[in-house]
Length: 128
Image 1 (spheres, rainbow, N blue to C red):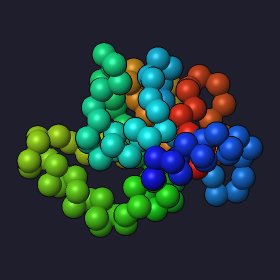
Image 2: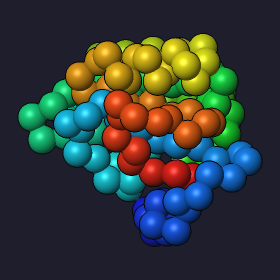
Image 3: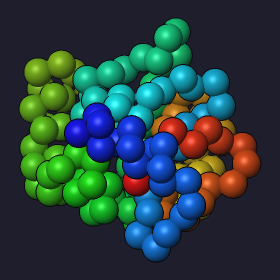
Image 4: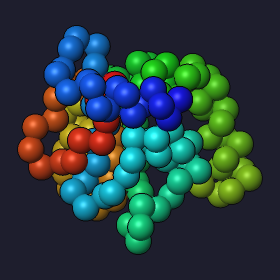
């Protein structure tokens, strides 16, 4: 999985139809291999920065399939268990790529994913 993410990150620089772009607020130092752990609540900090992942409803099915390798039901179940066991809340859900991008630009520690190239103002962690 980590090797796949690294290969996609290194060799996937040109955007293609169906690509996903994992983005973070400037100042977040995150490796492509950390994305899965962050969205499952296993990685909560990048250095001294508290990570604040946000799901993107518009791109979530592709993200769950490509990155987390699970369906929406299994993802929701994982977060239900994590909430009861560790007291963590699931990532908030943004409705569109534009909302996800705006959240990441405005929120320190924020990360999300989108189906269009993000442009300036964010750090591109991986292209999948």
